[in-house]
Amino acid sequence: MRIPAEVRPADVADAAGVADVYRPYVTDSVASFETVAPDAGELARRMLAAPRLPWFVACRDGAVVGYAYAGRHRSREAYRWSVDCSVYLTAGERGAGTGRALYARLLPELAALGHVTAFAGIALPNPASVGLHTAVGFTPVGVYRAAGFKSGRWHDVGWFQRPLREPPPVPAEPLPWSPGVAPVSGAARPAPPTS
Image (tube, one colour):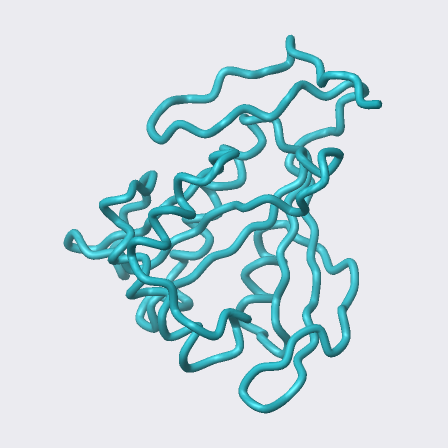
């Protein structure tokens, strides 16, 4: 039986390894709708972007072999309790439980920060990614038809959703992520009124 990869919070020192994992998804597939692979500097910028959200890496022998992260679902204020999640793995880690291990760290962290719902967009067909997301509790909510054009054709995107916690009647502001620091519930801080 294969030894599980070590999963830990990512920091900017991991950006080059993250870039290496991500590059084939941009250059050799349609799993990512980016068309130019970001370099380590750009990925470090994304890791630190406000509001700061969690990034985790999976490592073997000190090398990054996968990562998972959350990003803002949409930019408008009322969406701030929702996040989009993604997992990327090297070819050798697919089917080894590494994706599940990454989500086992990411999803509880998001809930502890005060987020309520996680979403994942998957370019179709992608049975491996659909299988991973459904295995960790995501359910399909719809398909955006012809949502992106890459590699000479149009691609549909399936959207999946997973509750992170029960939606509170008056939600506290989500907390920013600090790697290696356990979140302290923001339940005592209600969201400011909106006009």
